[in-house]
Amino acid sequence: MAGLAHLEQTIAESIAIEGIGLHSGAPVTMRLLPAPAGSGIVFRRTDLDNFEIAANGRNVAKVSYATSLMRQGVLISTTEHLLSALVGMGIDNVIVELDNLELPILDGSALPYVDAIRTVGIRTQRRRRETIRVLRAVEVREGNKFIGVYPGSGYSIQYTIDFPAPIGRQATIVDLAAETYGEWIAPARTFGYKADEQRLRDMGLIRGANAGNAIILGVKGPENGPLRFDDEFVRHKVLDLIGDLALAGRRIEGHVVAERAGHAMHTALVSRLLKDRSAWELAHVPVETEAPRRRGHETAADDVLASPVLMSA
Image 1 (cartoon, rainbow, N blue to C red):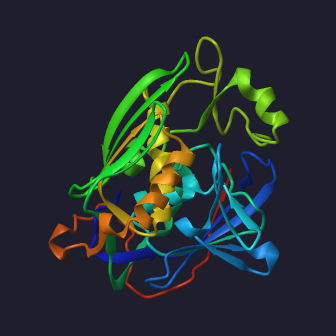
Image 2 (cartoon, one colour):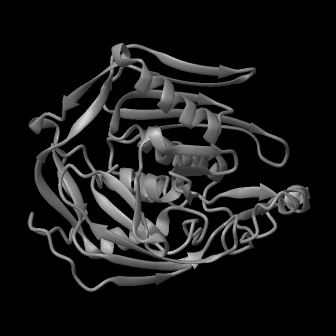
């Protein structure tokens, strides 16, 4: 994550993005717009009279192979990669306009979003940033699957996965207070097994999946390699988790541990944490914890809508 700055941030200019949905296969045009301080992340369906859905735990809908939001029957699907990029780059407030129900999958990672944000820059806003400071453990267990969040300074994630061959068991620990998200987490791509393809398509899923937006795993390994990292699979699960935990509405201040978890357990943790008001408190990020900025292309704290940067899947 781009330093725990003590002030909220938005993007400096608008960003235009075009692509297809991973599961729907439908084309979608999306714009990210700077938003006022304190407004959070809000999705806007331009094809449905600009109907808005806030990115928070109250609006979580179905979660299986992706995370979706719903309000009054209106759906926004596969939000996790964009939300992850926004958290990873330190963006608190943004309006996300799209003209279809599913966000574009792009290359299957969060890197295209990170690159676009770096291109337009980040604007600091005149409002103190609040975090959800974890005061005591909150856990969700389901058989041999587990996820929990615990008190701790900063924001760190320990994730372990255990998939059938050729992935096997992988584990990693990530400190999101360090400015490493763009290099170490964002490039990790979504993945799937070739043997599962027809079953998932018969379920109405992965209609937009192809070798350009997902790692396709055969018996011997990736069919469209090389991998970007030796442990790209667990890094992508961390990417997903960061995006799903963004639905808490504010940054987490604590230590997250996950074992064989997935979208459903990620969002279940958000729900359980928010419901247990004794397990956390709202806290302002102290001024002295602001990290030196190395992003470049920073601008002043005025709200401006400039010409969009166009990006295609």
